[in-house]
Length: 207
Ligand code: HEM
Image (cartoon, rainbow, N blue to C red; front, side, top):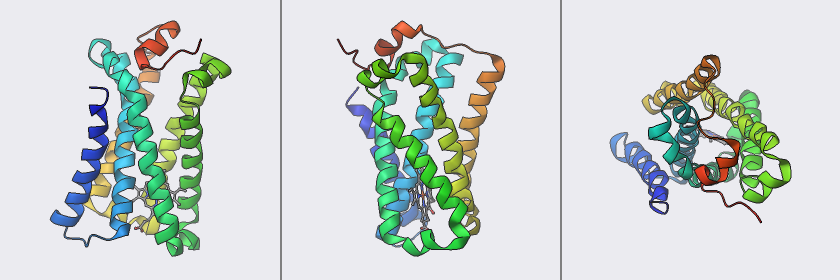
């Protein structure tokens, strides 16, 4: 199953591309491909964030899924990086336009946080930083996810969220963030002990 988990991001991307090109009849351009990566990245990163709260609510069902979180997160990051690079090359005018300033600043901060999370996603980094400090850093991901929500909501005066897929993505991101807030308010604790972290997440423990 561990290798097959990559199918989830791949299928998500192709479904979004299929929906855009075949159902919405938009031409298959590099811009549409780049945007499909952006939408897939947001769904996959959101799924990773969702697994944390779900594993606290229903440990028997969702703690076994936590071992797929890292692979999913890395795919989500790769998709976001492809989108960011694509946007810089293909949408430079949109990025440079003053009316998109706050959207682009939000995107850059979100991308920096995701990059730091990705770089520190190894057993070695956890050991170097210490578990508690590393955990705090990983939690900034929720702030990054909120910044992504701002990014795609206000870009080009809200053109993306005026479309059906944009509204579905908006509702999904909001749901992920609300569930996380609910878990904090309910005071639900982690479903595993800190010493079980590596095993639960399938991350190798350095010697
Ligand atoms: C340096 C980083 C980034 C830059 C420069 C950037 C730039 C852009 C630009 C220019 C657009 C508008 C595209 C268009 O008008 O067709 C856009 C849309 C979007 N971006 Fe980003 N972005 C960045 C990071 C991210 C990240 C990290 C995510 C999510 C993980 C993301 C998600 C989205 C989404 C969902 C859209 C809407 C797609 C659509 O219109 O179909 N972006 N971005």
